[in-house]
Image (cartoon, rainbow, N blue to C red; front, side):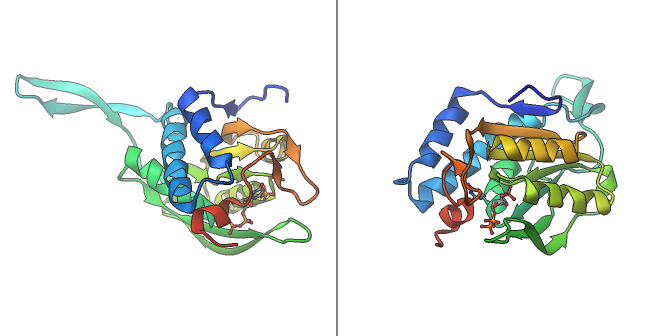
Length: 212
Ligand code: PRP
Ligand code: URA
């Protein structure tokens, strides 16, 4: 895939190692959940590099100084249900005061197009940096729909963080929303005829929640 502005493929070795553990079909639900959370924290560390800072006055035991702290309204983390829920805790370890919204989408098993069933976002959404999280960016339908909803509710500064992406999904999300910064743990080869990512990790929601 050609490099694209606002698309970042992360390359930290710890991240790559943990993603490989996720792929293994022998990795059970408990370890899978832990890994998803750890990966979200590693990705979040990179994705939040550009959070704005402002100098505030702090009294140390020695003297008073001006020192930087995160500025502005609290971050909004928005998981796409269900599988995105698995990434929330990891991000909250970095930003415990973040607000959490939810967008419920499921892919139609035949058309693979997303259907919305829930949307609740923290207000005022237009003033927050928003991190949409979903482990899988496959066709990109869910990602595009989620960003459409958030923009329709007034969201402006939006980042999208996934663990595994297919080139088709990255292209679709980037073309629909070129202003959205996309952070990817690993770019996989392609989609299969059922719109699953290859080699991928299977159905992320089922593996996180132990359903089938
Ligand atoms: C999965 C995944 C994404 C979506 C990605 O969710 O968690 O939301 O598919 O596919 P796309 O890029 O082709 O839209 P799914 O619809 O299976 O729902 P679930 O999380 O409830 O299992
Ligand atoms: N959703 C998943 O959970 N896995 C895929 O490979 C594609 C979509």
